[in-house]
Amino acid sequence: MADNNRGRVPTVIADGVHIVYRVNTGSAGKGAATAALSKIMRRKKGDAPGVRRVHAVRGVSFTAYRGEAIGLIGSNGSGKSTLLRAIAGLLPCEEGKVYTDGQPSLLGVNAALMNDLTGERNIVLGGLAMGMSREQIKQRYQSIVDFSGINEKGDFISLPMRTYSSGMAARLRFSIAAAKDHDVLMIDEALATGDRSFQVRSEDRIRELRQKAGTVFLVSHNNKSIRDTCDRVLWLEKGELLMDGPTEEVVSAYEKATNG
Image (spheres, rainbow, N blue to C red):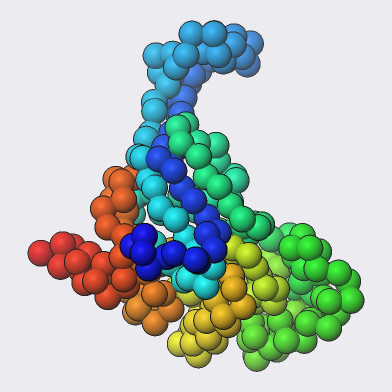
């Protein structure tokens, strides 16, 4: 791939990335003081008995370039979402490094919104969090509402988020994120929600983001969305990168392996 990528601008470089979670399985029944002392001792001596190490990502390396849409596929627990969180700077690397050019933005369907605030207020707060000015938010407000389809069956945008279904909340999250051009946008299962018309709008918007020199990462179990949206795919299993290449080549190999 080196010759094909000559002259292209890299946006994300993952260099031998390892991510390890530590789960404390031995503190049940301990008091607060005992648990605190255990933590201090672990800092001095390393991982103590009762701490389980989960090696979620194992030595993953790749380079992403401007204008690419990259799909991440693999079975549940393969490390896809963990890798995105590391790229976004939300998880530290145990070993290796992640380098990014520009500001990565992670959009996940499980990302918390302010449930007691209305959809209107969440659009404002979400836009501000992404670095948009209040004037930009005002200009794009109606297009965000229309894109999400929140108001197709009533004036839901003026109601608290706690009244939304999970699908409505996910569509609004994507619509807020898609209102801004991103250097690196990472989408975790967002296209799995909503009807086919919303999925088509989302896929069209991802193509627009790519054309504006951004890079898009998409985690999805929907291979059709990956095929329709991405030009390159990373296949992870048990935290390891098994394959990195053109979409059809990698997805076909994955389907052959998983379908026997």
